[in-house]
Amino acid sequence: LAFRLQAQREFESRLKSLGIRRQPASRDYLVCKISALHTGDSTIAYTTAVEFWGIRSTNVHTLLWENAALGAAASDDFSAARLAGECADNFSDEWSRWNPAS
Image (tube, rainbow, N blue to C red; front, side):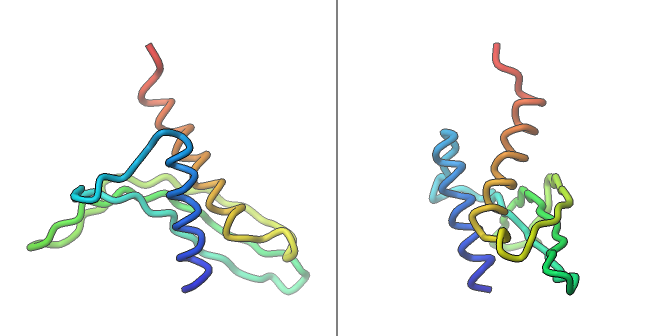
C-alpha cells in the first residue's frame, strides 16, 4: 500500500507541474493504478492505468475513463516515481490527443 500511495502522490505532483490541479471540493478523481509481478529473473512486469472516477457520496462511484499501458523494468529500476511519471505522461498524451491546442 505504501508503494501505491507514494506513486499516487508523485502522480498528483507531476500533474501539478503540467498545470492540472485537483479542486478540493471536486467530485471527480484521477488515479494512477499499478499492478506488478516479479518474474523471478530480476525483471518486473507491470501495468499502469490512469483512471478517472466520478465520486458520489450517496451512490456508487463511477469509472468514467481509463487508459492503460504495459511495461517491464529491471528490479533496480522499478520505482513509484518511474510509474507515476508514466501515468502522468500517458494522461498528458491522451489529453493532448482529445484537446488539441488551438
